[in-house]
Image (cartoon, rainbow, N blue to C red):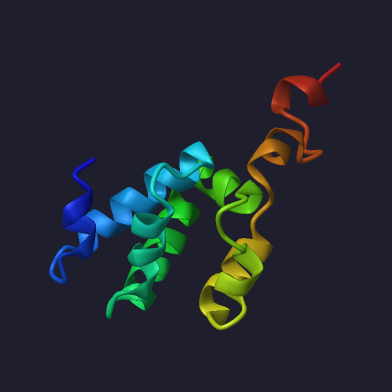
Length: 108
């Protein structure tokens, strides 16, 4: 990715994508550029956009929960609308084991 764009004030969508790529990999090539994603004037917008995408994308949600780059609890505590949504959802790896029986399984 083109790192100088991370520092462009009008490139919030780019910062969102750059941060997500690093969170999904759970490693950073340029720590300064990654931190800048959250330190610009639109840092709140970037965090909220990542959290919104995590609600729709199970892979990103799992990466957010396991990431060594961010502290999900710190991201969620000042944002109650996301806090409740993240804690009301079952973790992606447990969705297949909800304990419900399919129609086929119910008939013997």
